[in-house]
Length: 191
Image (cartoon, rainbow, N blue to C red; front, side):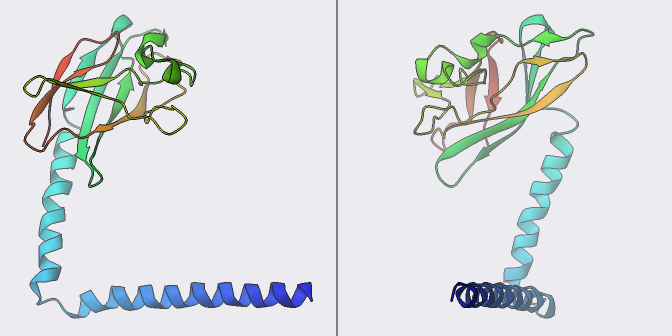
């Protein structure tokens, strides 16, 4: 009886997977045959400039370089407003010096909930001086910061990808002061 149930369950899972694959194939072939509608032209026009902007800005020149202790730098490469009301900052924490650097624990801030989850960028804030508001890195229900964690040191000339997620400032806010403990404050432009 267990074998029959297992075989039926496997057959059902296979049938569902096959139907999703076939449905996906049908969706892909439809836009290829109908090239005249403007609906297929508009997404490609919208995605092309975004790709060009990311390619030309991110690798060549970061949006922001915040200088920290012992020569450590935080290079912000992208700032994205998510549809859920979040602002995600992505970049690289870099050590351009010729020697290894132990990252300072102060970067995580001093909130008890954040500190107990190890070294992170949990102390980062965004300050909107025109609205007189400060935005802190978001936390999950267990108090873990929604940012890169497990940071400890960087070797000479090394870097690591990092991210931080904040509540998004209003769409009318075009720039904020980015602050991370042990780093110089820097102005960050929002799109």
